[in-house]
Image 1 (cartoon, rainbow, N blue to C red):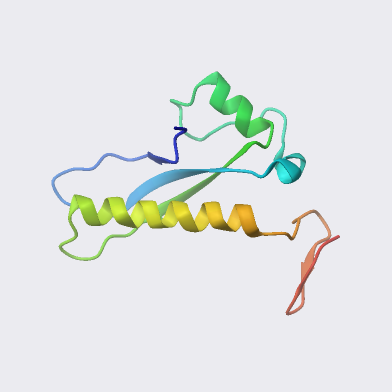
Image 2: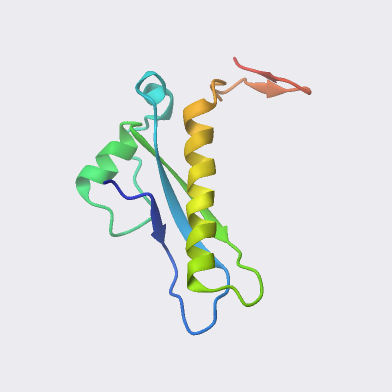
Length: 112
């Protein structure tokens, strides 16, 4: 299974905000819109094949934070990260608006 969530900062004895990278698979018919030659992951540990998939638009990356509540456990943090990934994957899979230069919002999105 491909990576979905990558921790970008160290966890210590206290659970605080965690910076993560989320990787979502891009539907084949939308990959050209996500493609960008030379694009690579912010995660230095990404393999050449993983960076190639990002550059080709097969995978897209979102860097975000997980903000656990007071007294959260590692399991709580894990679930928050998984929920964020699922929301991101759903957004990439289901969003039919192509955000290209010239796309605008006036109460409704208008693709260029």
